[in-house]
Image (cartoon, rainbow, N blue to C red; front, side):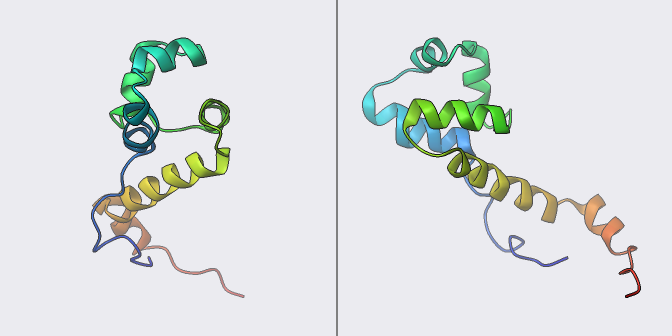
Length: 103
C-alpha cells in the first residue's frame, strides 16, 4: 500500500469545509441549509460533523447550493476516505496478504 496519508493528519471532512468556508462566513445556519436543500436538519448536522459522507447525489446538491462543482465535494470526501483506509490496521494487514496477479 502506498503511504500517501500515513504521516499526515486526517484531512478536514467535506462537512467541516462546508461549515467553515460556506456557512459560517455568510451567517448561514444548518437549519437554513436544510431548508434550502430539502435535507433534514439532522442530516446537515451529521454532514457538518463528519458523521455522514458526501455521496454523489449530495455532492450535486451541495454544488448547486454553493455554486461549486460536485467534483470539489467528492474530492474532499475521497481524501478523507483514502486517509481512513490507509490508517485502518485491518485493511493494511489484509493488503499485506494480497499478491499481484501474474501478467
